[in-house]
Image (cartoon, rainbow, N blue to C red; front, side):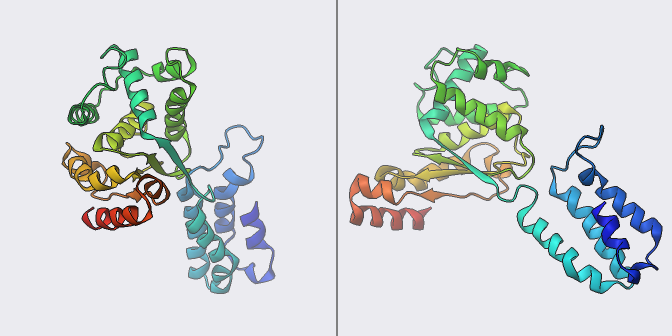
Length: 277
């Protein structure tokens, strides 16, 4: 409706092909008529909005209406390109031990291991296990079981259940609703792989449109010092670099490391750790 009004509101457009105006208006109809019209779904992917806008721009330019094309229309195209349909993506942040607890609960619920068996593994054992699970197309739980686990009382801690519920929200949300998944108090490569597996179990695999960046946050003095070796182990794990397309975001903690070791020691650890990483 908006497109039709814009294209027919000025006498200067009397020569603009009517079939083109109708076509553009019909493409925008999904947005204009989404409310209360059966079968008209709202737009969730920004490409669905950019495509008709760019088609309108090209059509106006091709028929001699460059002034119209370069006005409010191009401003709208730029806004969609900058902000998408979600305005600003949200980051997810959770502490690393909560992810370990969630993985432990998944294994126990699936009958793969007893409660506490994942927590008891060494870091190398966790990395090996998680890498193996991520390399298969077989989920630990069947469809619908993860939802049952979230709603039931198998996991006594509400925060641990919330970790799994969050993974389901990320998997089901429209594209670009979420940006980074930040892991507070990250200590090892297993912390990153654990989040990867949780998202995969929820249905958000390597090609997920949300939380593409899983970001370890090294905060304590020990974690900053061990950060380079943790990353080496992460990058050496089976298939990881291919899944992230050889791109990795890392965060370092300024306030927590200063509380942990004092400002001067923390500053030096941050400098050395970042250089080595």
